[in-house]
Length: 243
Image 1 (spheres, rainbow, N blue to C red):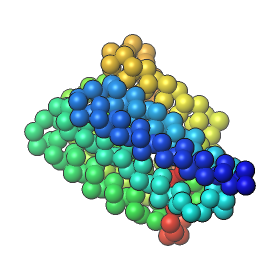
Image 2: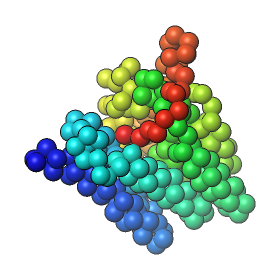
Image 3: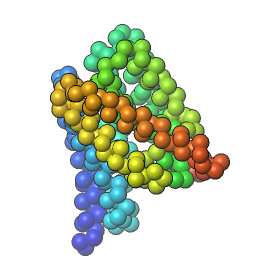
Image 4: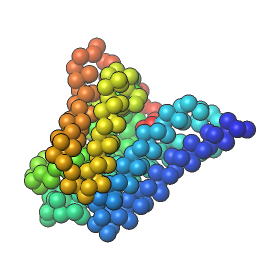
């Protein structure tokens, strides 16, 4: 009985991500971008913890009434895609038609990617950019590049979702995990710092955030270039979870 309750409590923990996404959206509607990103960082932390807990306590076998994969996908689309896309559009960082291009590309391409059953590779990495627009958006807000740089970045990453280029999962990709997981933790701390200071963070925080982002984006491709052919091919089509 205790094991069953514990398994369902993991589902409840995952579901708090929906609450944090609503709090982030309310902040975004009021143009409180720092507060929005702080709530998204909290949701990001929940998303990083619930997967290992789900596997450890066998939620699929002990709490089957709730579909953990579907629950995870719904929350991830809100926190990884929908709210960051709204922030990029509404903040004025992408003026006029550029904002419309970005918001259409991000939401349309991402929902197709989320529904792709071949998204995971055999080593539990992602095949294609995993629509982590929350991470992209916080770096954009922290660095404030010119609008055309933002637009080019959005177009390239949207296209990368449909390429067979590997992107690591910092927790589940075993290769280089001793480096990738600490880098992901550092990225989270730096992102929270930037948001907490209303994106008036010290220069070293900015460069640390950029460096960590570059590693997380490029590590999978570097692994792919140095591993046996076919190892990074997508799995056979199946229903999957991002955890």
